[in-house]
Amino acid sequence: MAARGRGGPRKNADGPKSPSRGRAKSPAVRGRRGHARARGPSPRTSEPDAGRAPGAARSRGPAPSPPPPTTGTRSRDEDPGRILQRTLDQLPIRKQQRSDSSKIINDVVQKIQKHMETKSASFKDIQKLTTGSYYENLKIRDPDEFDVMFSVPMTRVDVQPFGLDGAFYTVKMKRHPKGPLDAFLSDDIICASTMLKEFRDEVKKAISAAADVKVEPKKTGCPAVTLQLDRSGTKISLDVVLSLEVRSCWPSFTTDGMQIGNWLGTKVRKEYRQQPFHLVAKYEGSDAWRISFSHVEKQILTNHGNKKTCCEKNKKDCCRKQCLKLLKHLIEQLKATNPDLSKFCSYHAKTTLLHACTRRPTDGEWVYADLSQCFQQLLKDFEHYLKEGVLPNFFIPKQNLLSSVSKKSCQALARLIEEQRNNGFPLGSLSLLPPPSAPLLPPLPLGPAASFSSRCFS
DNA sequence: GGATGCTATAACAG
DNA sequence: CTGTTATAGCATCC
Image 1 (cartoon, rainbow, N blue to C red):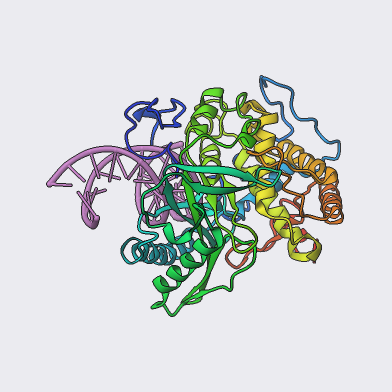
Image 2 (cartoon, rainbow, N blue to C red):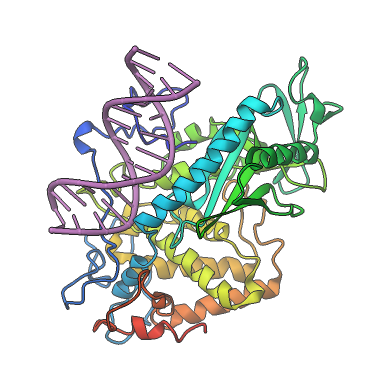
């Protein structure tokens, strides 16, 4: 997948399949380390700890476009930027945990991959594609959920929409010689559920020797084979997803989607649209496959700046990813105590951010020091979608990601978020998570964050 | 086709 | 801030 922006000397920036955006970082610019702004619980001095969010309310310099409107509710004496920063500080995955989990996951994934390549006729051409939050560096708190797609490259297929919103498609093989997928065909149409059933069986075989890996029962409509790993106390769930990689023009339902022209540029958009797309299988129902652009999402989020240098070392930092992490965190927190919200997922958050980036395309509208305002605005965006009950898929505008969520749930979440937002610090409740490793220290003198923690949502 | 090298990103220590 | 450690991912070499 993607992540083209990474690795290897880029020979040139305009190879036909390179979505590179001509962004080749010159060698001189490399070696950027992460922004070490999150460093566990902040120092307890009164010094500015939250390195990056000092004066959220301060002037933003020559902003190319008007700042997001500030809500008048900035709270009393506490700097909301600081509260947000303290919350953010609690979200990163700890190094040791990351190391432990990835070791376990990589081991299992490699087993499955090897098995498919060597023991299975139908899936021997499969390609591994890592997707989802963890591999986008957007997973928060615990590395306990991983997504890996196993993708079968297709040549010469006819993809037809199935249904009205452009989310599902049937796949027909055109004039084909005998091939490894013949067993899944009926009238040359690839049957998703048959193929997925066999895939699932192969996954089971691949991990049959591992006592600490369990296969979850299949869930109708869910495209994944979900594995539960429990190795010496570390519990991880791994979604293994079967997909078809289609190298042809994107379906017409996507024509008006992914409006990143003003944000990342029309050239970049064109490059992305020249990449293959994926169709993921699901159980039961029809023989339809659901379309997925997770590889493009990953690239967009990696190369998220209006300017090429966004977030590079010694260049301006933006807060797009931070805003997304905070929104995901907020939704997770609300879900944890509210059963009515079970239908909401992190993809709603991600989609909201993508739309927000197209509406406010310049880096100047996402300056790190303005985290507080940017996040408030993002919450307002989300509330708007909830109140309308309509959140268009970023790639397929006709598809409403809230169509299967009841109006009641949408209203409920909108109200909860509004309440948070109008509270002065929407995140007050959030920053209460106990620090990752036992909080030996008394609450910091900086503010109510710590005392909020046990109060809200409990 | 596996080992290795290089780079991007991030956590984290000083 | 700088430097170190770690995973991920691409490219290249043998």
